[in-house]
Image (cartoon, rainbow, N blue to C red; front, top):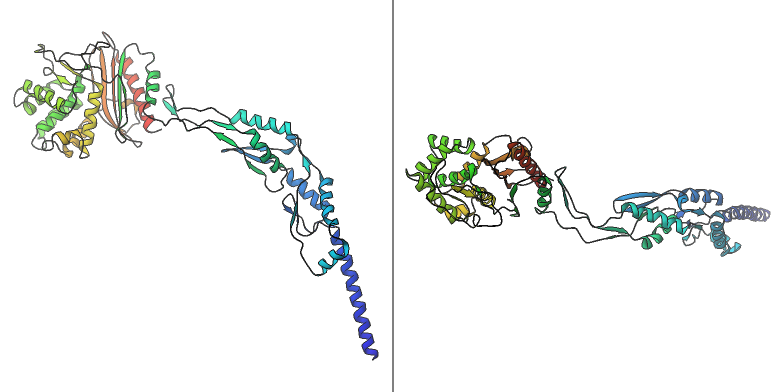
Length: 470
């Protein structure tokens, strides 16, 4: 009986000691931040108030990242008069504690009953006007109006267009204020209004470029460019009649291949090569006479003219073979009947930059198995023959005009030509950014200096290359 009483007494003493220990532990617990409580998003349950306020103060003193689209600006809280109010924040904590009386809270503590999570907002303030001024400074730096694509003739480069963008300060203010008052979300995507997309870049930009390059050229010029992938073309007075010069030998070469029954023999290959790479007038006449005209050069001229009309190049003709003195007839074309402009074209042979550009495009398409030449002469021209024409024109290397404007090693299949008052070059340029036709003709009354025309054509060629490989 005594043993039982002693045991009960011991149990009561132990229980009392445990109760007193738990009670003291709970009193200390009551002086800490309650479990489940976050301050401005940071879990602070179980931390002493001093420690919690220090952690919170450090967190809200960190810069806020403001994202203006792809640009990031750091906002230091002190720059907008931000002040963390620690005492006021603690008051909110104490109010929460007061909502739970001592003994019910002690019971929950003993039963390990976790209270529901609560986030107490930060008590702080900032200067609204300073924040508006800060955002206004961002707008001044990063807002921009609509910028259309543009050309830079000095650098021979093209500037892409950009949409208008404008910071919405009114919509951004509450977003930034929330970030300033958050200990964990310290990054904001500012509200930026975007305008409609700019005009898409296109060959029309070459008009701005060429106008700048040739602003001081005292004569007349014509440019034709064709994107061989998309079919887009640029034409600047490209339907004006010009002297045919040696560029017309592209047409002679095409007609010669049409009349060949198979691959050219060694002698014909030599004649073709000299015509296209050495600008031989004598060899061009041999092709007109022997390959095209069945022994009659004038018959060769007539057949060439018929082909040009058939394939739609109505402004291209020869009245006689090269170096003839007597003009048997005057040939009228839509181009040479114009009265608004004249380049004093050679009456013996004429073309336009557009005609030569389209003939080059036909050869390019023919080499790929399609296009006008194959459609017009399915039994007389083959892709292999058209590829041979491109290869032959690619051997014409002079290191000037179109060639001078492209990186070394770039393939250029072209034919150049010049007379006293007119210089020109017409070719296909093969580039990583796309293949294209470029025809440039320059005219100056009475005489055109090579030192003037050659660098201008090179700059136009370089700009065109840059457009396709920008």
